Length: 442
Image 1: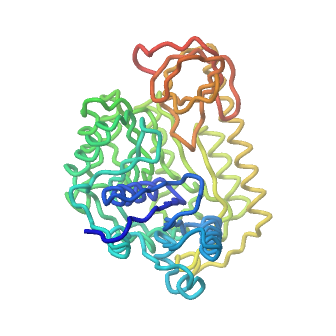
Image 2: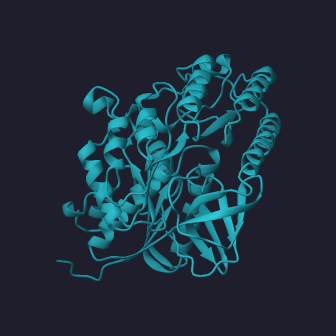
């Protein structure tokens, strides 16, 4: 029994979708203890603030530090009584953070839920395992199928923060998915550091195709989307599963990072340009309606202008529909930090980034223009006045295109509609009114 009032808590989540899932689980535990919790809302005076940090690259670290400083300021002003910092930044820099920010009441790493609850004198509710307080719109949710990563990419600090790959059992994931669908979720987005490796640690073989097939059969699930499929060891059986299950949207997120063999070797990506091209060509052949999302890393140590031009040539040839890019960040503890000099000047990194994204803007506009005058199925994510914002099966929330539907009335968030595309922008489609419930297919 608690002898004092339960704390009013504000929870802040920074970083990726995997962090969002972690936070949603913790918030559910806090609420299960009777706490009043606001997650990512406007910051207001409260008893406790918890910030779940990101420590992936320099900009993410800076954002996390800025939040810590802001919360310390709130504490000094008496607007908040206690400040707790958890997550990836703590895993990487715990000792430094404890020294630099003594005003923070406690630091916890990525496995924060139990020690955090104990510090707050709250109970760990075992019957709530697998449940989350969703912070996404209720019609979609992320399903994290594994933790950690066994890859040895030279630029990546994730294994330092998240440890080795650990798959969750299929039955555990099926139960969590059922619970999410019962809450009203229509779209599940599978995430992990590396979907391709799923199941190898538990079942001694890749099990992603089997998991996807099981999830696709769940009643009530309408879209199933796959993020973060490592190209090396890509489970080719997955393509057959996708072809035979309409619930699995024709969308594959495959972070390629580069295509120059010289750069790929230095990055320790475990693949070659030839294998990457073969993978893309196979997907195009087996799933002609699919879009491929990827990310490229520019300015990696030793990347020459020739290497970069090779990457641009690849983009021109294969014309991947969804592309994001990052500039290389020299991260402590990584193989690249220990063995390479960060020798590509910042101005060169920025120039290459701009050239790459300008090319992708042209490719994306070309892709979007093909849909003018055609009907597409969209899922509405939000409505603002008389404008609805939806997504096609080829678009993931937050990172991809939207369909801007103007002049609408009575449209419900979380429902599917068919719209006629009237215009195309580089990263969005435009439709007007005339929404109808979808018939079938795309």
